[in-house]
Length: 208
Image (cartoon, rainbow, N blue to C red; front, side, top):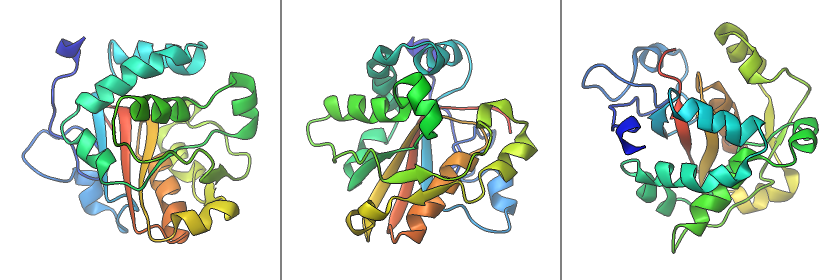
């Protein structure tokens, strides 16, 4: 599988693949407001064979794939340093009805699998964030709709604000398509007083 996980130059903020020696992609360079994420790391492109494995993990009741996918995340350059430099590992939450129907949050399964493979991993905080409202699922929307869909979609859980204040948080999710979900979740953490927010995902969609 490693032949499908070649190291790529990626945008520091959104993890989109870069074609030139730069730290930011064109979109992040031209955004009117900077991302709430300090950086984002993706292990692979969302393409064969990872897209099928992630779909099985996420939609076909195969949470056991979390271990293999976590190992791929840890194989990404600087991933272990990113984790070690964090105080909390926070999964991007699902909507309550989605969690009920699926039976597990794939992002939390990844957090648990990452922690199981590292000797000195920071603790996970499963309920640090809550989803707000009843917006449609991101994977069903076109790109411009995705960008509008998640404005104000998350909030820090009131009972966790004290634990988050001034801390360094690593947001964990399975796939980043436009970066909107991670940005929205990071913004909610910033508003709760988190000092630094970084992101770690299995895969980034190759094209904006």
